[in-house]
Image (tube, chains in turn blue, orange):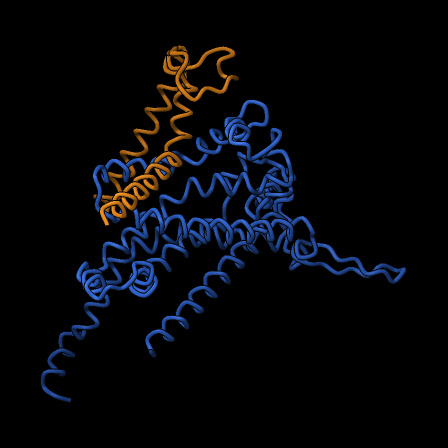
Length: 321
Length: 87
């Protein structure tokens, strides 16, 4: 041991340890708050999913194991009965709806958001005003915009039908939200309208990090703008885009308010959040709903892990070039 | 070359116009509708036809809405203050 080390040992702690300890105390209030608002409710939901708790008696639930997820019972006649969320067609319908909604809406929003961001990144008169206008859909609360769109999509008095009739895109008025074939399109339409500004904003932040001289060099070299976009802009804003997509994906996978307001009780658009709330509150199957909430969490976690994992694989592939 | 540039800038501003129209129109329509009364609500008007502030008077003069605004302001203020200073 050197003398310097022994001197520190005499003080009780090394500098590193002192710093770590200080950092812990600075972090402690936030960790406590996070535990109370994030970890505790989550763990409690997971716990509920393994019990037979009902909404009337939150503390009287008994442990029943995996029965809410899947229970197998063999009758005396030899017939095997499967019950639980994992064999519930309504649940898998909701999962499919959610995945379809998320993939389609996030794809459209990313493309449109990128286009809008590219437009806003260009210099033109009144850019500030246009930027402010773009943010209106995002600034309106989801409940309000869902109600607003529900009225605009109304089959008799809705303006959307009127516009489409005038343009000649449709022959007769469509009951957008009531019809099971079009309900999903209606929801997607509103979600794209509402969230494209968010994507545009995140893409714009990425675009503004790209140094201007790269574009100048490309222009001097006479590279076609389309090629510049795919070879210069897109790779450079890719990290920002990846983060934007994962934010949106998380948001879309747990979508609730928009669908709950716009198309309540429609099997065509019912998502995982909507169906679990329905079981939790409406159907008085609290534990069953908790099991669905837990599955929702698991599916979300899987999705995000997969995305980050695949994203990293792609990134390392680029680094190897 | 100038004709080409002109075409480009026209196309660009058309795109800007489409984007603005797409994002602002529902909001605009909501405002137009908010000034309509009675059966005017069930007509589809692209331009403000009626101008009646009756709906606003009803909402603002009602019992609950002023309180609702106060609640929102209170929550917004306290959360911002806590987030900023309570570290």
